[in-house]
Amino acid sequence: MQLQSPELLMNSVLLPSRLRLIEFSASHFTDLAKMNTDPEVMRYFPQNLNFEESAELLKRIMAHHQQNEYALFALHLTESDVFVGWCGLMVGFPLKHTSP
Image (cartoon, rainbow, N blue to C red; front, side):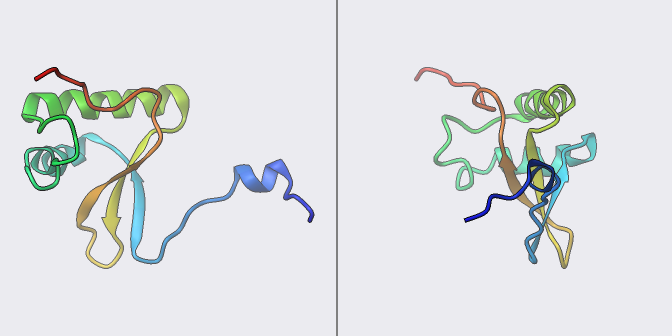
């Protein structure tokens, strides 16, 4: 088995047919905050986030991307451009843990 060159691997991009992965920006705030307050969406997370906590999360995501050149990405449906969530990698857990 022959391995691909590092240059090829570094330039690879995930292009799913039904989703677009977009770098988070301030324009995502309303959709992100709405998602973070939904109990059904957040049921496996430590807690729901209010608007201030969502704003802080978005700032951390964007700063992390600027500093590390990777972070979480906003997921949009290709056909409708509707925001449906996020995925990606970040150093540390993106949401603050709180004790009950």
